[in-house]
Image 1 (tube, rainbow, N blue to C red):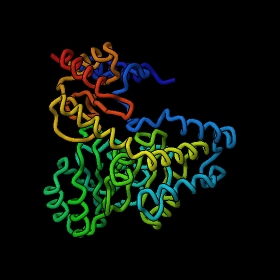
Image 2: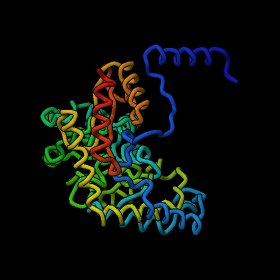
Image 3: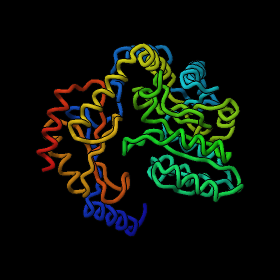
Length: 364
């Protein structure tokens, strides 16, 4: 057992979190969902549940090994082919989480001597992947194509260059200027890596996301798709290289085989019911108008500033029957604690009107 010094150090750190208003608490869902990423309401869709339950009875609950050992199933290859077609990519590879997919991409392709250009507000999984890559990292201002252009030019011909961004940022709810980035990457020979976690399933003509003309995209299946895991989509040679070299893929137990049935059903619903996507964005516009906030996405940050104020307002809204959570540093920059309001297909204008009224009272 560790000595008292370790316990003392840990307890001191926990006390510091308390003083800073940064101690988190696990809290089960309760009230109207305004904080999950189940944007299209598919996590409890009857078809997904039925298909997955049938698959569990047929295929069992565990894969029993990594996919390069006994964990491979024909179903994984089938859903990867279907998702690649959905994205308009040559091939895709399924991972058990978006975090692992981001780590895999960023620790496999960039090498020592390369340079990674990363948006300053990228998700923690992208940041961690960049840190573990052994490539030199350069941070550029959020959504600033001009600064990125200058930095790419200054980098010259040193190694391979990678630009890493989210297409729709998870805490800001704003879009990256992907067309500008794609042009810059073509001009400088850089590879554009785009995390589509909060865009896939919602944006694009078929719900395929926002990224075009990219090297690879990472597409989370646990948000709008309503299931779990993530697909990396890109050229055939890149996906084959991930299978051969990506440690998060090689050394992870494969997901439960039954997950494939739920993913198939999710894509069936997204393709057959485009009205879900349209309705979600209609609700986003309605709430943004009520809150007098610009933008158009389903992620709406309500900036409150201090940690204590964000926690207080969230608790009042929870008491009023709304499931919203306070988002604080290090998830967001210091002084920008907020409510991250995320909308879903199952809401209504009546519910949103009541939320606006309660939010105004709670924050006054």
